[in-house]
Image (tube, rainbow, N blue to C red; front, side, top):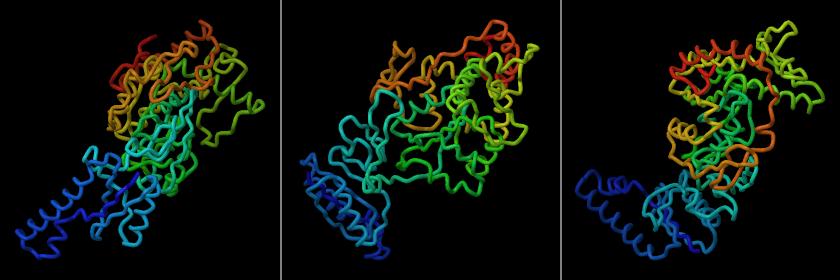
Length: 421
């Protein structure tokens, strides 16, 4: 394949003005002639469907570079020309003979990933049947051509824990316009405001057209962290997902119990201010949330996190409401599509998700991704929950009912579970 690079000066009128002074007529004439020349040169090559034409801001005269090799070799040749010409290394823009329109060197326009991989901007995603897919970083030359950079997050999923945040991330990171780090960074938990310039270093690469998102489910009920985020990232957006409080608490218990077993009976120490609710994880959920006298251990973080309204009110005090999207975790579990489309609208990105992207997996008992490749959550997702006895369930419903009703007032809308008991 031959790749032809034309280094053009996009400001033709500026060139003409420099050569001919302030004569508007002369400038217009020269501009028209130059543009006609570019058009003719372009038309002579459109019969070759495999030819690509690159244009970049440059003060140099038009220069042709042909490369009888692959895309990366061609890009390196262009970079060498730019370094010799002392031209800015802004992202390449490509003029395609097929579409006849300027665009970034976008995924799908050039084949840079192997069979079975999805071109995702700065990475190739390797299709796997179980989440997460493998992210393979593209070469430095391709990243340069696409303007890939690491930057601080544009949006964060701050919780709530065990409400579906991992599944939400799993679906969203398939969107061509979204990038995520591979794991929870918990960056804001451990860094001061003056250290937030380091945030970009732990984020993934993203193109200028992509949105970088981070998920740390523990941010939601750490208000000092939210205040730091506000000071450092005042314009960031947040996507919060809330599951029915009792189911969330039981799921949280099962998760923490698994951690306790794995760590030989001890839970990791969370360094927070002393007044913050702490976990108390016993051998059963009942023992964990109920005193021997039958009263609830309301200070246990298992229950505290599910009192969503107490934290959401503070979020709305710290950030404007229009920067926070709240999703219904139960609706998301039953059918993720409406929630994902709301996220697309909230972030201002193109519609990607539709009903053809998903299918119900009879074996696992929940919805999985079908397109662009088949993928389900890992085995620790959807793990069996401890059954809650009727008397404990009644106590928990009585406890959460008033908080749920207050949540409706703060949200100014009902969720599927807020009036269920």
